[in-house]
Amino acid sequence: MDKVNILLIDDQPAKLLSYEVILEELGENLIKANSPHEALNLLLKTDNVAVVLIDVVMPQIDGFQLAAMIREHPRFQKLAMIFVSAVQIADTDHLRGYEIGAVDYVAVPVVPEVLRAKVRVFIELYRKTRQLEALNADLEARVAARTAELEAQTEQFRRSEQRRSIALTAGEMGSWEVDVASGNIEWDEGPYRIFDVDRASFTPTVERVEAMMHPDDREKNSLATVVASGQDRFQLEFRIIRPSGEVRWCYGAGVIARDGDGTAVRVIGVTVDITERKRAEERQLVLAREVDHRAKNMLAVVLSVLRLTKAKSTPDFVSTVEGRIHALAATHNLLSATRWQGASLGQIVEEELAPYRTDHRERIEAGGPAAMLLPATAQAVALALHELATNAAKYGALSTEGGHLRLVWTIDDKALVLEWTETGGPDAAEPTSLGFGLSIVRSSIEAQFRGGVLYDWRPGGLHVRLSIPRAQIVGASAAEKPAPAAAREAGSKRGGSLAGRRLLMVEDEVLVGMMARKILEELGATVLGPYGRLADGIAAAKSERFDGALLDFNLAGELADPLADLLVARGVPFVFITGYQRDSIDRRYANIPVLSKPLEADSLERVLVSLLEPPRRRAIEA
Image (cartoon, rainbow, N blue to C red):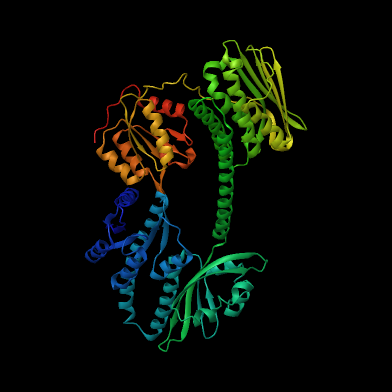
């Protein structure tokens, strides 16, 4: 089978490169154009072009204008065109694109599998259309020699083929044809299914179909209104009411055939049930509002931590704030994994105690029944446990060689009770006033949830009893003990663990890049960047010498896949730094380390040292 040509049009070389990487496995010829002028020249010189990929936003001439210019040429009136857009496209722009002749839209960041699937469909449609044209040419030659009776059958066949072609273009959902004079409608199986009526008992007419439209949509979408508009093509969205009373959303598109006087004779089109799409849009709107709400709440919490944290020096302040933010971030990750339904108490406990298990594994005991905490409760408990653990490491049982920490919890009909017991450490003398950390524990449990906090200052260590109303628990079951997390590497290697290393950093968040660069330079590394754009990162990767790299997975709306693939191909070790969950990253990068934002200095150091240390890798030469 001969290869077809796919024309890629974009003024940004980096995007063209990413499209080329995504589509090369289709095995077709890929032609690239950096400007509308170059694209038009290539179209005129090239035959067998099946699909055109057009960037909506380009200088001088945008994608819509270029598509209109292409459509004006007789050779390209049926050419499949897909718009690629990195900005939100309004409904009017969608309508404008479809009127020009666009067949689909693809949003940035591009999902490789989706883009390949869309292009593959139109390539197959192109080939089948060419085959159909050849068959039609042969059929017309035969029809010319046939009798008048066969000519009538040929006309019926032509109309059937026209309806089928439109239905295929619209998604193969349901096609129809209206005789304007009589008001009779011919349906295929699709509309019967969409309207949920029986072919044997329901005869479609304009009057009957319009009677099933929602009253608020009926007049503006009636056949009379569409015909009177003077347009030859139309697209509509409307609601219908099924015989059962169920309301469904539909999309309708069609063409109006007129006689020599301009009078509408026939209307041919398709109807698609878009109810699920409308529901998805509604869910997306609700989700956007919820994300905005949660983001503002989290920012408020972070701001409060910053305002209320006190320290004797700047390094102490940074360390304290970093620990508290990390506690919130760890709980946020647990909640994200359950889509904010709740977080496991056992996992929260393990997250907060994991940093101390390296040096104190045998001296820390924790366990209790499985319990899923509500989101707000999970965050408060995580912060409270973080403060207690920090206090134990600085002043309590974990600050001495012989100290022991035991954390157990129980659940009864009224409450979840956590018992924090330190033994073998310094005597715990009751202070005249609680410090900020222990004040957080009391405030988060008592004020926020009407729970109870009891401090018992004992010889050998502090005992704390936290009581949380059972209403704050999503579920409780048999006993669980949190599985030990991988022990963190003991001791910091700050001051030279990355000495002599050259690291490429590609990160579009300025503050995150600055913080990461500062940490890496403190570890002795030389940092190239940070580069904020994918194209700049790729250029640096091709021209600079470096030992490893740090990549943000999403760079101003562009996925870092092309750069990651380049590094993998050249054997350069790298790590992703991202706010996404691990399962949001392509599976082909399953072996690449992922660090979640906000970055933790110790974790960053540990991952990079493990990635770069023996056998020592030679610096990659461009």
